[in-house]
Amino acid sequence: MASDVQAFAGGGCHIFGSNHCGYPAPSLNSFLFKPIFSVGSFHFDKPMLLALLSAAVVIAFFWAAFAKPKLVPGRAQNLGEMGVLFVRDQILRPMMGKEGDGYLPFLVSLFFFIWVMNLMEIIPVAQFPAMSRIAFPAALMLMVYVTYNFLSIKRLGLAGYFRGMVPTGVPWPILLILAPVEIAQYIIVRPFTLAVRLFANMFAGHILVAVFTLAAWYLFSLGVGLLFSATSFILVIALTLFEMLIQALQAYIFTILTAQYIGGAYETGH
Amino acid sequence: MLDVALALTTAAAATPKLDINFGAVGYGLAAIGPGIGIGLIFGHGVEAMARQPEAAGLIRSNMYIGFALTEALALIGIVIPFIFHGVG
Image (tube, rainbow over all chains, first blue to last red; front, side):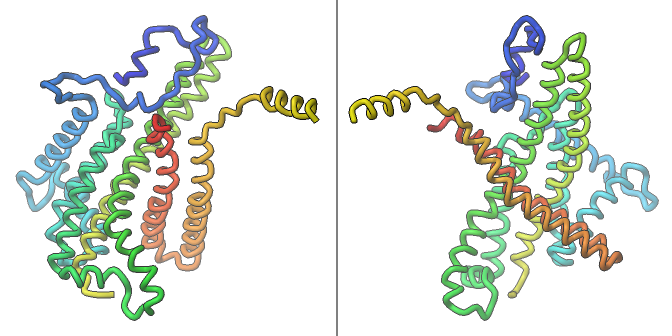
């Protein structure tokens, strides 16, 4: 369990109760977990377990869908085809065109892995979005960063890469301001915002749901507390629905920005 | 003169210390820009969809992309106080 949940889970810490221990607000401690087991100084805790579980779910789903593909698809193959065609037609083709089809496995894995890891927030026993630990989005971001920079330099050459950052026919005073901004954009801002956007969305979503869930528990008392708890719980349900939208949207945004950045290596000029 | 100075210093010592949570204030300020930005995105998107209903799918997907990029700034605003909580 999260380390601050353990602190008050034993006592009767309610608003009208006898403990008077105040509202246990979720904080950074909600994101720290006791390790399930440790090997030396390597601690295996709940976010790692959820990440492994999400990878297993995605692999199992696509294995079931495409292990023995038939001309008339069965149920799993139908869903798998819908997923792959969604990524290909809505994400890959608009950004990279037909020649980017080689990246379809990468983008499909990225999209479904991020989506399933985000979904762990609303699945009852897990209830933790593994993407709200900065290491997971940072690792995905590093893969994308190395890929698009390496591809751009390989296909366009180093000079072509920098020349492709600014539009042609720009007068030199504007170029003086535009060039550092664009270089910072490609080298620093893009990877940072790519990782932090996913991380911050999941972090803020988890804190929001945790605030109202803890409030539903804290405000409970036999009396007027029932009304308070019920209202808080309705808000938990509304926020869970909102989180479902945000989870899918963030997976979509990460994947489409990846496709756009890699597609920038295939453009030959503005 | 001396009694005025004495009165001022005792008044200064007696004012209550303000315990401002700058993280929360910072997030409030950080949410102004993205609030306006997201309003502009969806407002113009709805207007464009009203002008040309057959382009609604294209406009909708571009609206969501723009929304996520703008929302990122507001969310960085809520995360930064937690990051710098132990510092300073």
